[in-house]
Image: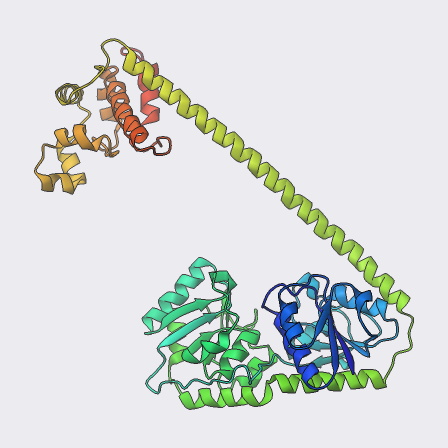
Length: 498
């Protein structure tokens, strides 16, 4: 049999790329002629070639006319159906959300293949596909590749793995906390964590508990792991012999509106309660018997044979026109969304530019103000010494010795005079000389005229010089009070606050 697989890209080692590699290689071993049509070829093509399977990015380059088309992804399968006008096809759907996975309606697609009963019901309802044209071939595992099976400790689980799922930081923290509280170490692998592994069969057998869904869950169970299906905002129950068929019917994935369990210490404790290695072995045995690559290949071959023995006499034009009309709407909507995103990015860049310019202007104004203050005759000594600073600060009541020592216990431990410490170190380090001013303090400082401004400007000068010497970024607001500097500047002594 000549089998043509369609695949939208072969650039990485995830999802349907690995499925295409595994199925094509298995059919080649079964003696079939196999090739792959993929508009975006990549490094997986080399692995296909090493197994005797050629891949092509142009449909007209195929060396022969196929007997059957095995379709992944709506656009490449429609290209193949259009190029080979009388060749039957099956369409394997591995997800219901991604736009690229949406099932195309075509009379020569004899079977729409779902990975679970839940997906089958969705295809029938969402796309109005007759139930008799829908088959279920569950996710599978290559038991020759995943040949090593670990044994679980009788005394309880010790090592856990989050396998492939991407969680928000709060949920990830909740899972880490739950594992730690239940005596489990937790590792994470997957693209979301920057450590995508192309050979999980080497590490999975070493874990007692694996948090995973779908194909990842099947692979983990095949390696002897206890599997707890989890998804963002949904925490499932441990897969046991009693719950196996229910979980298999939903592709080992929790479903919304069927439960509200969340990741927590108590939830995980419940899953681990009554730890039973024998039940885990029973689940592993069922996976390795019924959810294998060999079983999937045999089931697909049955579907091919049925398609070849029951040809469809139909005009493809109507199906192609209907699909193109559907694409015309969807592609245009996607384009508009993309345009909106690009416009939002432009607005955000412009806003950031304007805010950066405004901040630089404020910084320049403050520095100019500081230079003016420091150059005014009689306000601040050109090179203030510790004694001059101490006299100015104590005279104007802007330093609270007791509060400074209480707030800075390291200074108290040194036994150093707090005011001397502030003058020689504290101002540079951005330490505050007193607690936040209340109304009474504000009035007292106001009566002191420009004293607050003098002190704050001197502190700013020292900190600015320190920043420049250390080649640090421009001085931030911490360490001096812009608002009070401006108030002091524009409220000369004797003028009403109102």
